[in-house]
Length: 110
Image (tube, rainbow, N blue to C red):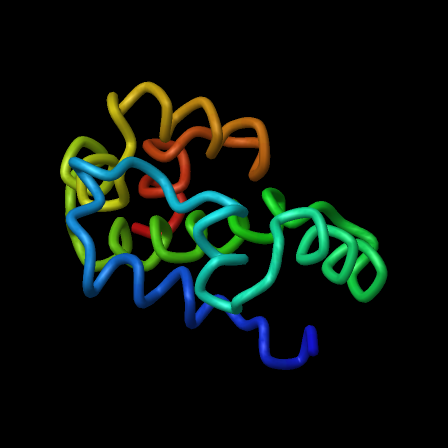
């Protein structure tokens, strides 16, 4: 079943929802899209990847952030496009997971 859990459900969130109003996609949202409980989805993701479901979703969000930053969007635009309440929340997650801030990432790709 996990093979069907790709970030497509998270991607659909960004094309069908208004992320700025809805916030970040949650494990519950993705599980609901797959017609299963959040706990079961979390168990499946952990069993197949060794990581938590929320970290799996965060990795997808950060990949999308990197893509948008590479395309020339500002950190503020990317944060709001992805559903963060404040740009600082994107910066904090980015720094925690990637080891560098979004501005350092942008400077590195120039």
